[in-house]
Length: 356
View 1: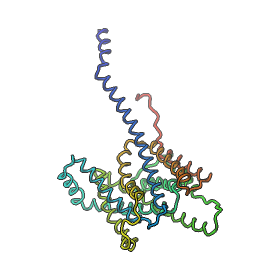
View 2: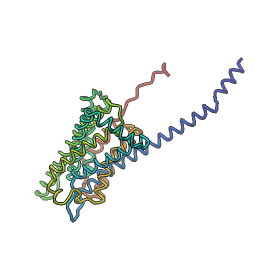
View 3: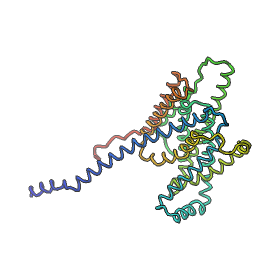
View 4: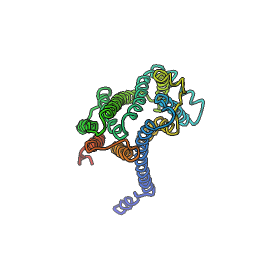
């Protein structure tokens, strides 16, 4: 009987169990690779969008500068087209199935669709404000200051979704506020008084644009999250609905603020390859992030934000030459990076030996 038990014990290591172990190791390796691919995509998208948008708004050209309002509209059109293609792919490239889904989820649910008009209008405002901000702030200062959206998102999550923040998260928000305050700390300049006044006025406009964008981003993001949790439809359908309203609001903004200029020189005045790159990054960037974010944990997202801030600072200083870093800025940037990591930190509970 003992021999039989021993034999059975050895036979438990069957080829099936070995195969399953190899399979689990392979899946773990694939998951690890996807995480680092996600990290690369997050860094590339975040950094390239900010830098190309800043470059496009400061690029000297003979003709007129492109209209930010028209770029927002073009980005919405491209986003709608991309989401339609993704839904089309989800339904085995069936035109009939695509039409059915769009009719059921958009036309036959007018109240749910109208709910998305609120975040869509706010996102449209936010996208326009980002152009204003990067027309008046260097990429490094913008990148650091825009992390204030962590604070606004946290506050709206607590008030609207009833989420509870841990001690590390509250501490990170305090550090975040301190870091951003240091980044915006005024420094003595050597330029003339008139030039200083122009620079101060431009930076103030850029700062106000970023602050409003942070609050709008926090509210719209939490509101959209709440709608997604209340419905079971795919995020691509919801993005189509957002895009449709965004297109309407965006066209309204074009004719309200730039109607005369559009009539004179057209909607695509001042467009070049850099402008279209900005439009593509703004439209497709969010969709790419939505697709890969499930593979990136909070620590990797913190890494992505930190690397993006560092790259933006280096490129602003060496290539764009529109940024003169100070020790106070670096201290503030380090605090913001630390706060980003701390906010994503999750304390692991102690393991109960009796349950192991």
